[in-house]
Amino acid sequence: MLFLHETHRVIGRYAADFEALVRDGWMGAVAADDDARLLWYLNHAMGSGPSYEVVTITALADGVAWESLGHRTRDGDLADLAVRLDACRHEVEGKLLLPVYWSALQDVDLAAVPIDAGTHELSVYMQDTGWPDAPLDDYIELWDHDYWAVMRQAPPERRLLDIQACFQVAHGSGIRPEAILMQKVVNFSTLGRLLSSVEQHDPTTWPGTYMAKGLEIRDQWESKLLRTSAWSPLW
Amino acid sequence: MLFVHEFHTVVGRRAADFESAYRDGWMPALADGTDARLAWYFDLAHGSGLAYRVVTVTAVRDGPAYVRLAERLARGDLQSWARDLDGLQHGSQGRVLATLPWSPPFPALEELPTGGDLREPTMYMEDTMWPFPGKLRPYVEAAGAVYRPALAAEDARMHMSVALGLETMPGAGRSPEVTLLQRLSSLEPLIDLLTRDLPPEVTGPGSWMHEALDLRDRWRSRLLRTAPWSPLP
Image 1: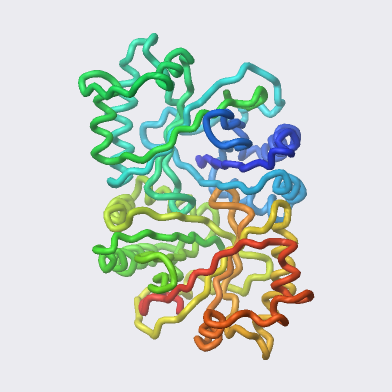
Image 2 (image 1 turned 90 degrees about the vertical axis):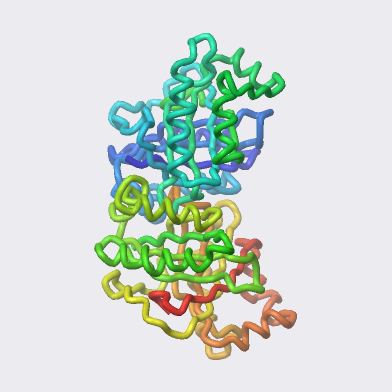
């Protein structure tokens, strides 16, 4: 299974139109072939980064589904919708993602993903994108052994994040080396403390151990706080 | 046919090893199967931009073949090759591209050389354009109807031809974006372009340069030189 990750730089004046086109047009149209589903529609939380930036993640059954989506958007039944979406954004930057070996999300039951745009509460994700200096495989392994494993052992009241997926970029569709964590924020008080506390990387306590060890293979990453829309299929 | 276009930031001290990884590793590894072939290996010409930059273009049969290739690199027989390459480059920026409707025909995968035979290097000008929002299709149509034929005209200022016209596949790069890989057949007009102002007849009303400003005003040119062993000249 492939995951199509797109960052849309939306024209502010057309932000509502863009969201409506995705919700009322794109989401259902993409699902018409039963081999693709929009999973997440996420707004980059204003106040934490760029304005009017939207992230969408779409699950694709396989290479046939991806190629078919390409044909449909270039000169098929989605071409008109694609032109209207293009007119609402400055640009879109996409990459194809593969789940890493330890990712909780591997396959998606596409038929079970809703396309009815029902409303629900909002969730916030911390999307971490990292670029190691070391081989990509070493970074993915570090996240497994020294980040995810430790996070799972933390008592519930200390948990900030639930890692729902971890991806690497499929060959030639973006940056290498790069890996991505999709982490749901499960405690906003802890998030507040993370944002407002002085960083103390005590090597004997989490996350100090990981922070210290992580510097051996990377010191560049970017966290984005992304908030689902009220109708995002997954939240 | 799809094209994996990669822009590599190579570790200068390891530049020869990097080239060898593609010539002696990637090219023959792909030649063992039927899904993909290395098409071009380019060096960005020193003196025209960033140092130690390499562009590779790999032709891939179709979407399923691309996914098989990606999985081989992520967790299959090519994983160790990719891991070694991580030590030879600071990083790479990849895109997967599809041909424009008017792009010239491309050889069948089986026809691409895989033996690394040497020949004289060839110069290319790779132009990447970013049309205004909502102007991708009009730009592609205009480039095919006006720009490409103009290159082929007898009195063309540049002696070059479009080898491939490409646009980004969904989720595999930036959009709107169009890339033209253009093969130079003579250096003299290029030097003229680099050293003289464009005359009014090239930039004035009615010209491609002028009229296409309604569709885009940002693009980037790279001067690329094929390696002597590059499968395609």
